[in-house]
Image 1 (tube, rainbow, N blue to C red):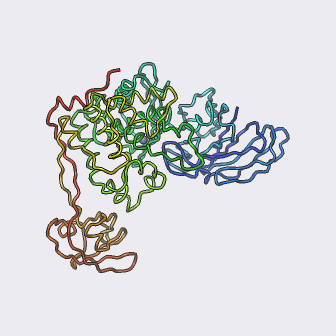
Image 2: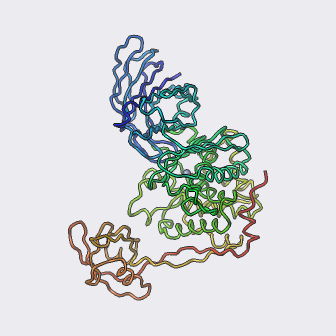
Length: 574
Ligand SMILES: [Zn+2]
């Protein structure tokens, strides 16, 4: 057993005191994850660790230690002794990935706070939380079982280190509600300032969860916790085995005035919940083969995030419809938005989703001004590949639900997902090889056959041309037009305009968005425009062949409701 004690006495200056007691092995090492599963970027949690010390519990004698790498420590000359390691952690990260303390909230992802004891990661864990008297009004929420609780002390259990770091907890003043589906208790706990109509939220979420359990046939968890924090405008979610941690704009939460058809804002929150809940099956239970025990010391690469994030993004919206929470038109609108995002991303012609998955660590989580030109999102394009795959499977008498169920059954037998898994399962389900589909759309950059597939299922896709004036995206501010994005090969790119330039005049007139639209929206005519712009503090005069840059937005029309129903209303029979 490994015992962790987290003390929050210095919450006001965002410090957590940690003590870890365990029986050491010879030359014991300790370590901290560099990233947290579900968010594929090296986060360097060890950056916030201070004053690491160790001692023999029996003698009180200090044990020398030194750092081996950025996230590993070597304890010197340890034998099979009972020892205690202590340190403090700076905790002021409001994201769903780290740890945060102040007078309103104590929130911890153990991955960011609790060191691992090398070679003993399978040992059982007891976690004690010491909360100061002044915060005794707080309630604890976590998917970790609580074995003992008083106002100021909580004792929790985790099966092993990997389970520990997959279960964040929050101590705060929350508003809570719960519902049961087939004896599985689902809890919702919301912290932060908000005025949520909890009953409405529980009613809608229950339908969404039930639709997902129905599709898979069963749930891979015994209970589930939605832990949400309401803020002004932060947004994010992280999936766990039997919980999710969410941060949401409070305006996305339903108030008593929420219309019967969910508003766009509320749909966004339901979509986020639906997404993270679906992950309990796809990525937490059905996993990439190398994520069964991921390497948390460094980047752990996979080309498969398009499956785990893309298919999840396809179903998160579809489940809003199948649960009855949104109607057919609202669902088709969500598909339209997804297609428009895809069409306005020229990088889809350069990077495949397999590459985009692999490079998540250096690209997806580190977007810059070149991202839209050269990168593609495994969420957005992944969701549309899932749509195309579903429709293609349906043309062959199968569907994506059956594929999901097959993946789930395989995972129950301990088989996880590699590059061959989906092509093989598709072949089994249809009796046809879909290898061309995967070559073209997953490993390649061939344009997705959306128009033709949607037409088969009663929906016509029309392209609406959109013109980016000169190929620029700008933000108007008092200094002029700040260039935020320059589309590659556009008129602006060819003239040498660059990101962060501030356009102050066009044809000798003070630049504003109206003037830019007027001069740069032409698609055929090619007037020359003289552009004055600052790059840093240096004035440039550039001549631009004033052409706009064409991209497309999608427009979807339902042509045949029966055929559409063959797609979206037909969950697979179990
Ligand atoms: Zn996700």
